Amino acid sequence: MNVSELVANLTQHGVHLQAERDKLCIRAPKGVLTPEQHAELAARKGEILAFLHEINITASTTVPLSQGLSLYTIGRLIGGFCEKSTVEYKQPIIEPREMAQKLTVTFRPLPSRYKNEEILRFREELKAEFQSYGVKVEDWDKATKEYRYELNLPLIRWKRNIKTRIVKTGINAIIDVERPSSLIRELRILIAETIYQIYSRFFARARKMSVPTIVKLASWAEDHASQRIEDPTNTQTIILTELNKLANFRLPYQKKIKIGLSTLIRTYSQMVIGVSNTNISILNMNLSDSIFPRTKIDGFVLHSLIPKIFVPIFPLPMSRFELGQYDPLQSKYADKLVVLSKELAKTDLLPPGSKLSEFIRRKSHRDIVSIIMDGRTGVSYGFVAYAEAPQYFGPPEISEDEWESLFPVEEFSIDEVRQNKIGRWYVKVSIGTEHVFKQIPDIWLVSSRSGSNKTDLNLDRDIVRIGLKGKLFLQFPKGIDPKTADIKPSYDVYVMLAIALSTALYAPGLIRNGAPIVHFHGYPAFEWFRPNEYGAGVNNPSVPCGTYESGVFNFLSISSLANQYGGNIVLASLIEPDHGTNVIASDLDYLVKRLKAGCEQGLIELGGKHFTSLKEKIANY
Image (cartoon, rainbow, N blue to C red; front, side):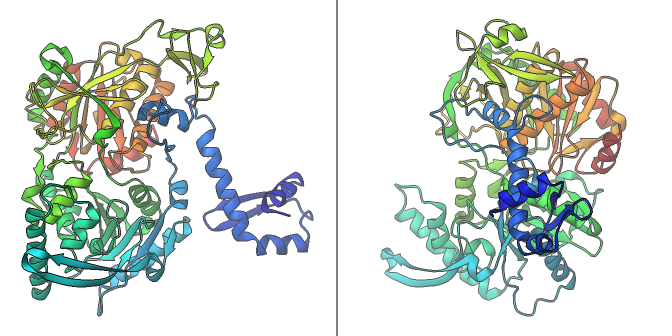
């Protein structure tokens, strides 16, 4: 009897099986299970757990959510995956336990004579937590393979055979500890970097090198985990170190930015976990300063660390967009965005961006980061955007009888998405206790480009226009050549589009005339909210920006608020744990006034100061 037949047979006799982490929970009427069945359940525990986990995962992704749409449909809509010819669609995963089932990590062997007892103990606890949630922890020997290559520079007739072990592409993360530097190591790095600069200048001028090629040329002399990765775009490096100054809420956020970037670059990692005997901190390029008690390590691993490993921070590649141009001088929304940016200058919520060249001294490292960041030369902390009024063609809402007369849409469930004779799509959504049939409008918004000064936008060169009409559109200001100018869209494109689309479907009054959106790396206090202002998202897993999983969470937050409070929403604060807050309002002046008041009263601050109390109070509101 296979496992599905076994479970089905037991269920028919009133036996309930449930998977909780690595435990198989059994509830059965007295006398139903025979000793032989007890023995079979014990012998096939692993097989049964895997089957039950798979059932839970399938159910979580195919059953429509309370808003009436499934994750499959939401992901396709906000990601611009509505045409069959687009790149391969991958359904969003938002449940951390499901994420864990798909992850493989490895722990790099410790350096000789490593004696930090606190980190050693945490390292073992972390390994156990990973395994309890279903993350595969691969032994170092199995996670790596022997790798040999020849380094050859004809100009100076220099050859070297390199033999090392590298981490295979299928590994999602390496967990390592911070390793001390030495004079010999620094000298080796200097030689390696010199070789790379010579090669890139004289032999690779006409072609763009790949990340693995750069690693071969420049990282052979180093002793950090990133040097031992087959493909750094697929495997993240996580460093365990002592808890540092970032864990101090009193430290100004501007100083935290410098400390955070320096820490990531010094350790050459995507994440740094700080450890003390009482607390854990986690740092990535979002530069949040989240702190967790050591006693809450299970929640830290499940809701913060696993999501960050599962969805690394990557910007949307330009290939995802249909490119075009627009005239910002003819856009009233671009003009409003400039006004919004300047009005927010006094709040200090949008600190200036940082040029990576100021922190990354080595050219090889800058080149690797540039490839991963799709040509971006810096990082910024927040965005400003202005959603245009949604564009409808025909009635924005129809009756159930009209819905029944519509036609199916390929790749979508007929219960969720249909189209009329002119090709306009409608969705069946739930608002309160009613089903409503809404047209999916064309969504357009203007936003600050990545790396711009968010509080002093230049109308001619700092504002891009982004569209969602079945696929993604990106328009640059007229006269700007994106191939030569440093102009790229924000990492948060999915989030912006998801907020705008969800608002148009569930809270149309909030966006009817367009709506300003601000994202900053901090949180409001619960006391900041006024009537008809609401917050949501505090209990979401902390996925990073730049993923459409983060877009899905923002979509669900808007729809959840509309279901709870109806259409009388004048401001929505959408919380992204370990990242920051998105705020959307129906009016520019109102949004600016409320943000300024919050900052002046100390009720809005950058960093994580207000997050814990905000989470407790919103959850009980």
